[in-house]
Image (cartoon, rainbow, N blue to C red; front, side):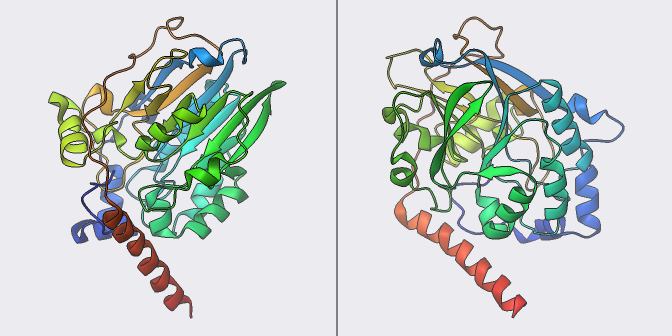
Amino acid sequence: MDDDQRSEAPPREFAEALSGGAAGERAGLLGLGRKDPRSLIAVRHFAGPSSFVGRLDGLRIAHLTDIHVGRVTPMAIQTAAVALTNEAKPDLVVITGDFVCHSQKYLDQLEELVRGFNAPVVGVMGNHDHWSGADEVRAALRRGGVEVLDNVHTCMTLRHQQLQVLGLDDAYTGHADRARALKGLRSDLPTLGLSHIAEEADRLWPHGVGLVLSGHTHAGQVTLARLHELAIGHLAGHKYVHGLYGTRQRDVAPGGAVYVGAGIGASVIPIRLGERGRREIAIFELGMAPGTLDEHHGEQAPLKGRAPGPELVARRNAVVQRQQAKRAQKRS
């Protein structure tokens, strides 16, 4: 979760927690205590778009996002998320970015974690992955069996059914390339989109991407008194903060739906308050029509939103470049 008004990496006062040390150890234990880590994770169920009905027969997709492997989020929560996902018996697991938390120190743990899923795993990169070193994060994910989609789409055969999955690289740091990702997209197949930043869905729906899964916001983490809509919506400028937006109904404007996951991990502090802000796994039953499941919530109206200008995106990308240069200098 990163305020869209900031172009730099995290505040200095959190540096120790994000990179290691005693403060980081304490931060990783906050919010867990004696609780069963499984009890801290909500498993929410949703039907897919009506346009998938008749084209897919009950494909189950598990969506996780913002796992942020590192000191801020206890590994007990991470392994609980994998176990709960496996218990749902998905046909495909998708993870929409921010696998790490400002550090490459935990890439071995990330590799081991993602290897624990019992279904194929597809993912896209987030801003923290680029801040920490995108090449190294990608390599760890691929060693763990994750197919990383960087502005491309792929056709997957799951239980003898074809699903097209499109993945955008991180838009927050200026790495998304929609034209490249959409090139050659087949209109005869149901298409699932993955993007760390939910607002990219607006420009994917007109191309037949009926459902987009995303993350980044952590649902604000504190959702009491709608504080998440104030912080992530009004202050940070996001239209989509948590949950379902758009429409899953066929041939109805705006032509598609997006789901913003609340995430599993945290990038600064692990505190979660409010039902909507709970750590979350979202299960989508593709091929089932909206209304046939008892869902956590339905589609909701977007907030006003405020798109970042090209100068802000350029500044964010410059942060990535500076951090890459620093890592290269340390290696030389």
